[in-house]
Image (tube, rainbow, N blue to C red):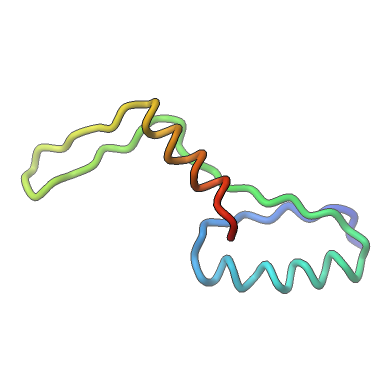
Length: 73
């Protein structure tokens, strides 16, 4: 029935729990699984206690996102 499953993940408990069901579904159908985590390509604005925010560099943002992607769920 299914040949390839594209699964969005965000690191939440619900996301992690759904992976078990996805694995079962993929195994039953002999399907491949691709996990996808989408990130905004621009660094977010971080806010401190004041109303003035500060940004992080694009390099630091990319490093942070890469770390999230490489982490095992």
